[in-house]
Length: 375
Image (cartoon, rainbow, N blue to C red; front, side, top):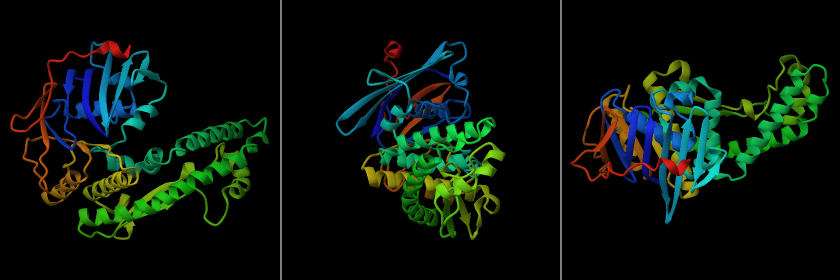
């Protein structure tokens, strides 16, 4: 899968852009506030329905505009799909091949996407939800019954928690225990199977990027080993009623990164933390491609920050060798010929995107945006 065409209308400072990237490595250069991060942010919104920079959708709309549009064409083999998202102050409209969709999950199914941002390692180390999401992204794209099962677990968990907070009906909150436990253990089995693959791939990747380093990765399922989830839910009923929520289950699963036998969060430098999280992302993408025989999209924003030259070149080399579509932002125009790979180069200035003339790129500026197709 690759994104072959991107159209943007009134997205932050990008008023009107039509962009046709290459199928592999795309390098987007420009000075601060030129719009290079906004360009890949628009790809992220098109593929996921949300930004990696803000939770407030209204911040994405260009000042003075009524709304924004992102439209893309993705190709997988001989098939093409047309994806569109229109956002205004009242809500959003999502279309896939001309059909309205209620959920952004339909976008994600067509564009498997990962992002490496300057804040990624902070988010990963700070948020257990973010860490669980790394496992669940892979399972969402690889196991077709995982997402419905995950939705069912979230619904059951919400019902149990609501009943726990309703002190007038103390027994009602336990009506969902058996189904919650059965669904939770199914989720856990899927995560455990993937984690075994991920851990091995991650350790190999981290060893290369850190030139040794003795990295580690551990997984906790969210309840004690050696007993069923149902048994432990029953034993914890009193404690759950006191707390007002369910404190055991796969919604509390977690990953822990380590380096040299210590936790990476407290004992690794910022640069080391970033490399470890990048190694996880790259391992995840490689496993996805091996399992599905599909390509995905990787966004890498200012990936060289906090790295010395040696580590920066190692990361660049792995990105070039992925064999998937990669978008990288950088401050300076450079020759990024890595391991024989010649990237497509683009330069962003004052919200305009231009190909670097010395590279074979295509950027169609003259085609008007068909904003009406999403209305």
